[in-house]
Length: 264
Image 1 (tube, helix red, strand yellow):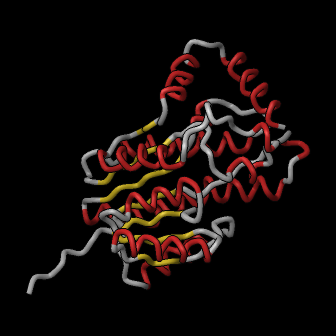
Image 2 (cartoon, rainbow, N blue to C red):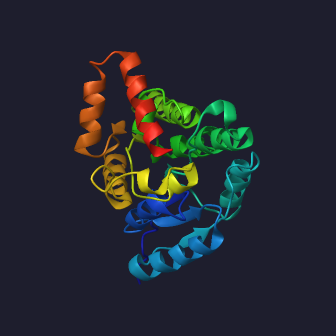
């Protein structure tokens, strides 16, 4: 009788939709999954799908990361279940469109809690065990939005600037430890993000400008497996970031503002 080797475990936040769902599907090929998001029904449906399609053991822990107590509670629940996390995917996040002065301040603070604080806390909680085992991967979903200020989405752009910078810095700090941190920085993606952020339905992202969640997730998984520091999916996004280096900062900011005004 031969024992089947235990599969590594990937924890995916925001797994109930969009990029998070596609990341879970891709990791399920050779990982067991810990799935978390606010919507438990969608998580259980995804868990059933991944068990049927890939034989993945899926553990569902519904959590609202906008709750300051949620990251620690999630970590304690995972530890209490005897699970070791080999890949941490900090994907959960959302945005909001409109002038900051008239924005829902409570929503902006929830955004910071999810996009920045929860990402930081979960990384800090799960990283020590990875370092002790001398192996592990962290994938943080940032954005091309994090490479410039974003008038009319000021808080969202700032949170993604943090995610990008934090991830790249950790990648350097962890060099030689067996643990890597990768920043996945997509541009517009065809998900429910635009609806949550309040974009005008006809002016969110055109089909020619947005990528599919699957394509973005594939780029993220490839980069994570390779231990890369940063990945920007899509030639259009790479080109825009390249051209931005040569444009005055004021011009870049005006261009971003014009783009956001078209979405209101």
